[in-house]
Length: 86
Image (cartoon, rainbow, N blue to C red):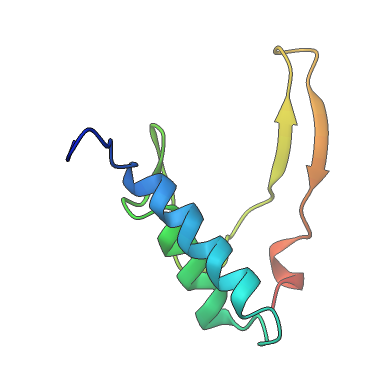
């Protein structure tokens, strides 16, 4: 805290950095370096909550965005298979 202002956490800073880059450089290609830079900004510790994640590389497995209680899950998004990402 400085002069009554609370500084945001590193995770918030990462989102701001990524959004500024995306909006200010919208005309630049989204290449691997830029994409992985966003990933590093969003996950500077290499963790998402309690889960360790690989930062700055393509994933090896399947990925879904899911919500709901166990047994009543709702899949909101099914990511393309890892082989299709490059």
